[in-house]
Image (cartoon, rainbow over all chains, first blue to last red; front, side, top):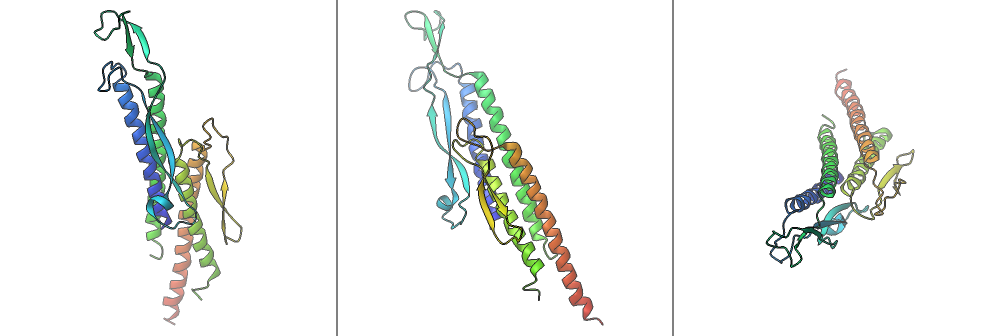
Length: 141
Length: 107
């Protein structure tokens, strides 16, 4: 039933947007972290989205090949770290500079807003599909 | 007579295509942020015999994605209302058929 596929597609959108929110939150939480397991300051994470074909992922023969979305990978932002002069900091180098994460609070907030807006759009779509399915059940009643 | 009622068939087709359209719009919304994704939609011919898939002609953003959130939300709501309208029509038609069967036998 194509309406149920529509639900799956929008659910994949919800998952993708939620992952974006999670990653942005992690970036914000670690915006001042100078020590990580790998050593050095925290590096900003970034989500890469790609389309999935539901024909492939669910093995269903859909003539129109509706495309959902999925997180293909989470990559590290390779932009340089923020270098601040803080000679008293235990992680300061010989010149007194400390490397801070390459996280910009402004950028993360913009990302969070975009992700939550898009999450809502998918929720709205699910609402419409639900009402369509409910009405379908009422045919002939 | 009920089997090949042209109006019932048309309404049924319209219902199927509207559901298909919802699927396409839903996919566009799921891919709001997917780089390189092009929005798709369906159009129907006036006889409601076939649905034709087409690429939505909106401005392509820098990442190659052209999903327009406002357009998709508007189309989705229009499409949803159309679906409910068709179901209403279908119910009305079936009610008429039923009443002609039930009440017709009482004479």
